[in-house]
Image 1 (cartoon, rainbow, N blue to C red):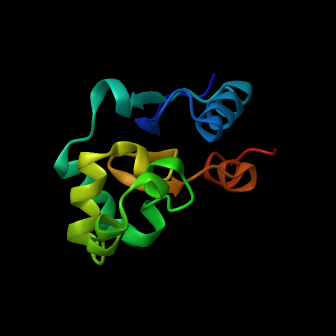
Image 2 (cartoon, helix red, strand yellow; image 1 turned 90 degrees about the vertical axis):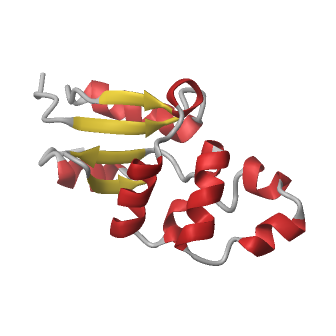
Amino acid sequence: MMSAGNYRLYGLPNCNTVKKAREWLARHGVEVEFHDFKKLGLEADIAHNWLQQADWNKLLNRSGLTWRGLPEPRKQQIRDAHTAMELMLEKTSVIKRPLLEQNNKLLHVGFDEAAYSEIFNLKS
């Protein structure tokens, strides 16, 4: 089993992409701490940290049900990192998932076997 190495995976446990990532990590013996947005929410300093490392457009899941369910005027308000952060804190399910970080460094947004293999120096 690979040491946790302070890896943290953020997401929702019922999200199919999060499930795939967690299964991949377990299959490859990688220990990660899981942060469930539904149970634990999201702290502003964590969201701010992500927005320092990744473009806000990359962090918002515009193809998900949460975004599509927003009223058009609310969608129009999201035009920069500040307004994106407000929405992310208000509705964590609008964040693209999962987010993988290590020691507050955002390693990957979403799930991709090849990217995870590279991050953990493993063969997929």
